[in-house]
Amino acid sequence: MAINIRNVSKLYPAKAEGGGELRALDDVTLHVSTGEWLAVMGPSGSGKSTLVNIIGCLDRPSSGEVSIGGEELAQFSRAQLDRFRAEKIGFIFQQFHLIPYLTALENVMLAQYFHSMTDEAEALAALERVGLRGRARHLPAHLSGGEQQRVCIARALINDPQIILADEPTGNLDAQNEEIVLHLLRQFHNQGRTIVMVTHDPAVARLADRKVELHHGHVAEQESFKFSDEEQFCAASARAPFRRRAAARMHCPRADQ
Image (tube, rainbow, N blue to C red; front, side, top):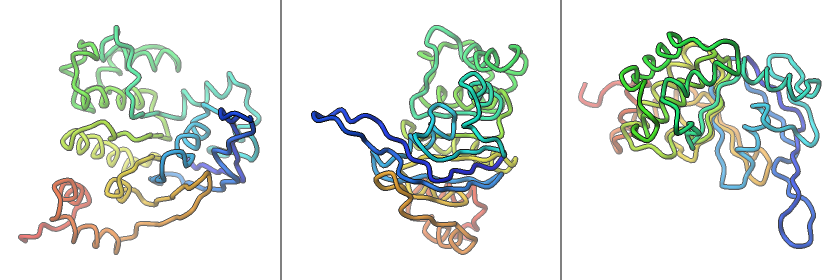
């Protein structure tokens, strides 16, 4: 499912004394192709999360046009936007946003409730896909950070979304769980899902098809990662454990071969 953003700006009232407006996005035009994995980078306050919120139908632009799968979002009511988001888009956040008094299974089933009918078997299958079927009856407090993030991924996938929006999905994870989450994202990408992922880590961004950098609400830079870029990435992989693991996922030859 393709995403088209045309001349989008987003303004918020400034909190500083004197009023005025804060321009979080400023005339952004961006196209994400069906099945593309896009990494979004930039310093804090550059508009990354605002962009994700607008694509995810959590917020509306102040001006400009957004279409997803050929549907112009401006024509939707709030209820229609909520329905579109529930059916087409899955979210993975840095903060897990799990309901603390619900089990992992119930947290996944909660996403079904807003889409159609709850189905425990489907929710268990989603947890099994992320390696957590055996932890289905545990509360979030009894799960590690990496396990909680994988519950979030299962919740994001339960309604079979065509677009996955991941806002710093590995930001709170150790190296081992980071590897697991990125491997899952690679699987979803290989299934043809469109992924928009915010990250501060250049090594993580390099796993995507393309990177855009935002600065002060503008698209400041774009870079596509071609096969030659992957070869360069593989050549540098021996310098850090994470790069070695990422290189393995990209099918780089081992240095000792």
